[in-house]
Length: 249
Image (cartoon, rainbow, N blue to C red; front, side, top):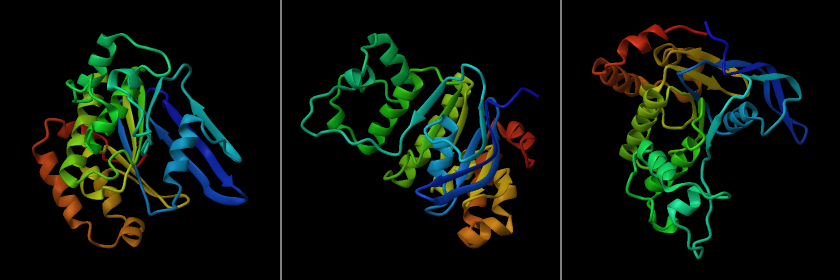
């Protein structure tokens, strides 16, 4: 098996004297979609930031493959409403990029016609697609998304996740997502990490949804989640790939 793109070896992270994450072991391999779920304050965003190197562990080590190209889609980005900024110009900050690069990235993100639109005139879903396009400019080997569908309605979130699956297929990149959207995120994942200051459980969506630790955090109302998971995957051409991932790493 290939070496992981990113691996966390027994890391603990403290912020202002408070332990946010303790004794976390996790890894992400090529071409897999890993989702991190957990209640508010469970350390999900901190774990993502540790993966990209934005925060350093107090204990343990983070290993990244040499020369690893990382794409990052933030939870949200505030822009001055008075600032005239086209999508093309935004994608080219701080350094201008050729129009064809912008067109290619927007096409991959599923919004090919937005290049000359003003950033402040975009809908929430369009804005997140542009943030995705910006992350894809780097041709990442791993794409990390921090609550990228926050504020979108359920159809918008589901469409975004389907686009992420398409990006994974087209680019061959791994994907790590932090999400609250349990009802749709399970269907888009190969592997789920359930976090609450430490990793409570991990494995395939089915394994995690059936785990007592997951039900203790999210209640027993997961039947709808798994019904959606089973429905989508019974019609998925990628079913065999997901079934092959049905194990705890």
